[in-house]
Length: 140
Image (cartoon, rainbow, N blue to C red):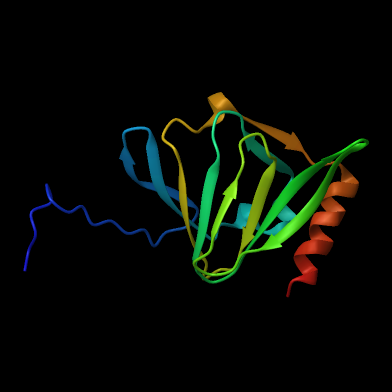
């Protein structure tokens, strides 16, 4: 049975990296899949969104979130191993990144205007990058 696309829009993404699939009103739904730049050894910065939260749901594979936790003397990297089908809401203004297994698929829900204009990156210092690698390797 074919359903009129004006009634139901069906999308999928099987490529690498991030791909928006639905934009509606103020929000966007995207899929994030493995990409080399998110291998732990290739993560050189964390990002934060200054106007919106960002929601992640692990659909397949493995994903580990890295969170920049503010402390008096800077930002300490902590890790959260995502569990399938649980919702992870990264609050606006929180530095974060993630690493994915090659078979991973993560659903992303965010404001439609989330991008470079209202986000910023924090370059990792050597000790932060070292901690990120330790955390990534301890989860195997």
